[in-house]
Image 1 (tube, rainbow over the protein chains, first blue to last red):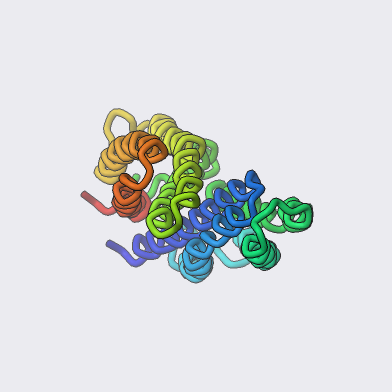
Image 2: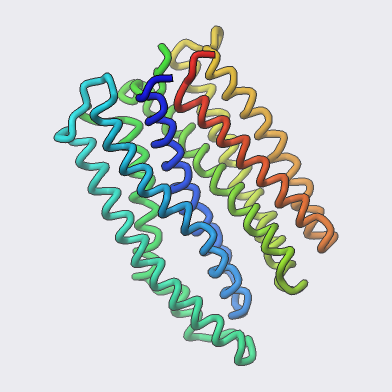
Length: 159
Length: 150
């Protein structure tokens, strides 16, 4: 196999880890949104830690091997093309939004764990944190950026 | 012809997008089911019940639609590119893996549903099946992305 084929495989592997990890975190987050008991919310949000290594490794693999692919691919791609720049901007925006959203969800999980140890009764404060519009905007915005990135990679407008 | 799916974006974007979104969502949903099943082995029975239900509904609401999107999108793409009657080796390998994925999805549906009815007995089976499924998906995306001459 050529260098290009190996790079494409590693780039796609990064994309699967990145997007797959986001799907895991999203699924667990939605499941937690549907719960009222703090212990159950803490348990489900706590499991998102298993998705984090995949998201981080995938993010850097897509970036590193993707940039390498631009110069290695035999289709005349260049770093100045609109689709490459758009993909890089989306990568940055998606990671910043997802990271900030994740930090806010971590604070929610810590509150859920505390409430679970103090009687495990449903809490209005926890419910409000779970449905905080800004946290939802950040977390789901990161997911939308990832879908947009895949669309850019598929259509490659201007390539 | 070899790298068709990598460069046909301007003409086959819709088909490729459905296939890729289905594939990455399928991987994520299987990953989630594996995490939930193995976690169910290690938590209190009451919490494990919650995890089994979430795992089963992740299979129903995410894994099954994702498999359908991946499978249908793949054949739509092959048809669009005129490769549905004489598929290249990498596509044959991907199609075989897609059929294996369908079988695993069906098994996870059955065992996932059973695990919600017989607590504690099938978590290991569901987790192991999901783990093998993840490896099978990795093999599939190797053939579909690198497209080795086979």
